[in-house]
Image (tube, rainbow, N blue to C red; front, side):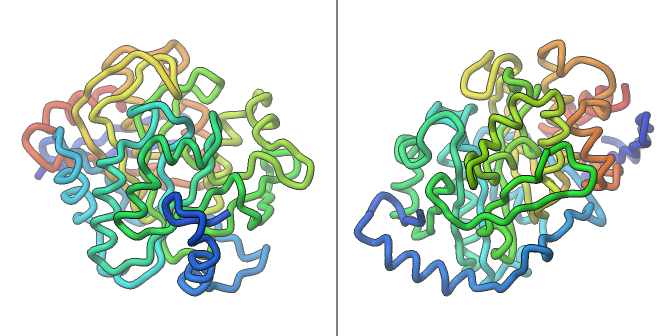
Length: 350
């Protein structure tokens, strides 16, 4: 297994190559009160508004890359490279990508979500999936994408953040948000957070939507008379604001399903590409940088193609506020990933 390391300065990229390359379960409304009680028991954790964690860069960030078309085997292999013993018996909040009811790669593939649930379930983790859709009603989106049925079969809790009342205002220092943003408390109460994202461009100002942008679904659309999504999407600082949301939490694992993606358009429809890859990391900046490199390999939008990958506003702002150390390794997990890793390295080094 070969590893590649990238060191990122504040204004330039240095490439150093190592050897080689409301709460509910499913759709059963009659169970609502029961599940709410279960949720409170499983996710009991007292916290104060001032105790919102500041995201810290992981100590040894790596981006693992696997060439595969088998999501179940891919997720299993990717997640097992992390120390999963720490998760045994703990509460885990899942954040997937269900912004709309459109099929993968617009939304998380149900096989990817199912495989993640299976791995965490084998650890006796107490699972919930929390989601807020931006293009459609959350409950309808989750129903149409099969998430409700999966929850019924696998026995995990769904938190519809569109109906959720538990928000904690986070006001980062020197933020581009006018008065901060309301962050879902379920992610603060969980012991661990696992995120899964897609590989897409974003035609509504985000430029690309991967792990950093996926965090927008953790923020309330409306809260106390304010429309936070209107503020975000109308701001010239939208991409910086996206990065700043990520100060509110630390994911333990991020899985990116890049078996297919959108190189243009997005987030709900676009030009289809088929990299045939799955990726995982504990560093959102690193995995998004690799994702942008992938988009560039297939030919992408002018915005995503411009300048150094690390000068992309989402990534540059994330580095500026300390979400990543700026140093990471690329680790291919099978022979099929070797060639693509070499091409990704070349793009990252530009």
